[in-house]
Length: 128
Image 1 (cartoon, rainbow, N blue to C red):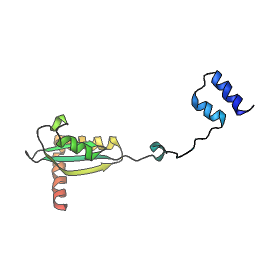
Image 2 (image 1 turned 45 degrees about the vertical axis):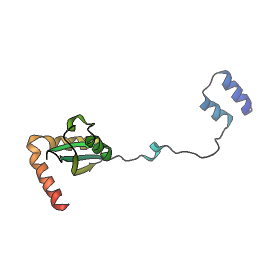
Image 3 (image 1 turned 180 degrees about the horizontal axis):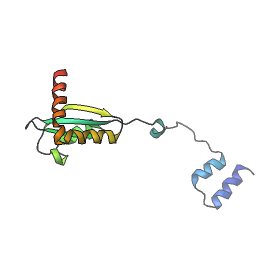
Image 4 (image 1 turned 120 degrees about the horizontal axis):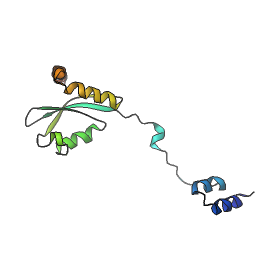
């Protein structure tokens, strides 16, 4: 059976276009585009500590896009830090999974572990 006949039969059955392409032997011409999913981009998650320039208070959080998240804090878009900025990044850590970052953020926010946060901040100040 010739490809023209196959295409005609598939059209009669209301086959999806992708099936028509395969059945007819059609090969696309021109540039091919690769899917970003094929590269398995490894996303990192960041735990960060901000300090308010106006009040001196600290805020800890996590994000996959740290630059965007800091902008949301500075522009008053984030409800928890609105009207308390501008904010300055004073500490950050990176983690391979969202779960690891969430656990570390929760650890830093609990009352018993604020001493750990103070230690990290003083070490960051002396190193930077």
